[in-house]
Length: 125
Image 1 (tube, helix red, strand yellow):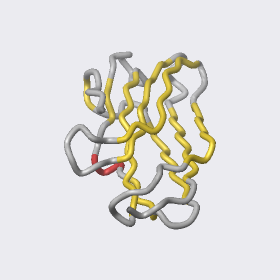
Image 2 (tube, rainbow, N blue to C red; image 1 turned 90 degrees about the vertical axis):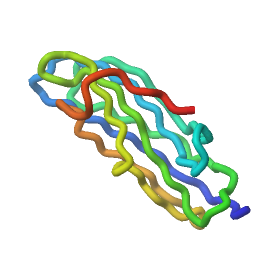
Image 3 (cartoon, rainbow, N blue to C red; image 1 turned 45 degrees about the vertical axis):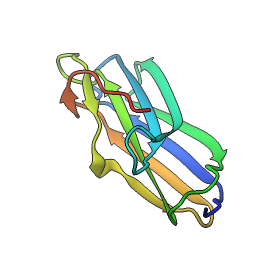
């Protein structure tokens, strides 16, 4: 097993100024190859009247991996849409790959406005 150095994690979510109040919930996870074995890293649920919500976490040490890289992704459920309905952003293209060697930065910048598919997210284990 390859041991890891610290990882700095940040999640920035932006909404359009035309939306006066919106809510969101996100889950950040480390992607594993086997089904239902993703590692939970961080989550947050909030409502705000601001156009941007920033979440920055203390460095963490995932403890190593069987590969030389970590893959991180997120699931975001939000109502930052014109009609206020709940949408889910959950896409493989959002994967961020970082080496297990050396201190790494994982930063997600999400433009949530009208983003994702209509409906609630399926939360991963």
